[in-house]
Length: 422
Image (cartoon, rainbow, N blue to C red; front, side):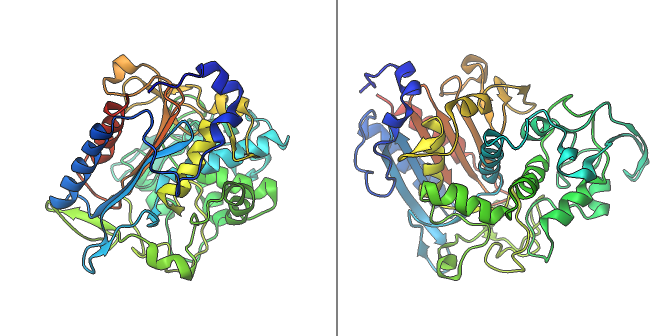
């Protein structure tokens, strides 16, 4: 069944799309989908569980403001045979980035800064950045030069600052590791301010704004939120985003009464899943029980949050509604429009670019899979993903929990959603 309201009207009257948005109650309606084809999702995910590719998963689809699919599969913990539940909590890693980017845009809309401002105006340690020129055989930086400009806030939002990640194979990897740069997840007693100021002492991969390079940009933005708002990042998120959106299960560090809902983290080793000890993957965890154990001191805007499919579904529904959900407006429609506008080409996805916080699908034909042009999305390191499709008035969320892993079920899940549309 096709939506009879013209898309342009939906954009202008975003509030209409948010009338029905309860992801825990209204999940029986499948309007707009073929019920038999939706069952293919069940078969595909169950097969992954049966074959030991994933321990379990939760998947959610909402269309026209109504949840049409919200199911759990397999186990939250295989050893105890604890069933996965719809409210199971997952480490969402880089899906934290979208939330931090929204926080930055909220402060931008309040008049605190311009996006083209140098970040050093607010975090002085980034003043006068330098670009790495040469390296020795061990990967140590041997020469640098002054960058041709300052890192701007918009460069951080678009991952074009020249900052990278320590876990990624890139020229500054050795320098980052030697300096003790944190990739975002730590159980140690480290403060965000200390981590970001240490990062600012590192040279850049290239001149700010020159190209895309995935990195710790959103962690810097998280600290920017702290500096500008005067609140710690966890408090800002709780008061300004999670409370208005009724995201009651999203935290940097889980309260004791929610810790038993955290899904066990697995690692695929020699083709089999085992409980992760934090060392198997490129991203190291100094405590695999993060975020329920450890010092609980570091608030990583780029990787630190844990959440449920339902909570995150409310967040992405707000974005689909052009910044508003259930009468609570976080952003203007113009800010959402800017965030989902293509800015820089992506090295790993043909037909896609990066906007301000999201991957944006530019060219469906070049992309070569089911979807819609102008869809925007991102995922997390432990096999979680989301996408927002304005053309179909649809959002999708998939959450599982492993790294490293070889399954592509999160990508196939998206195909299975589109093939089920009427």
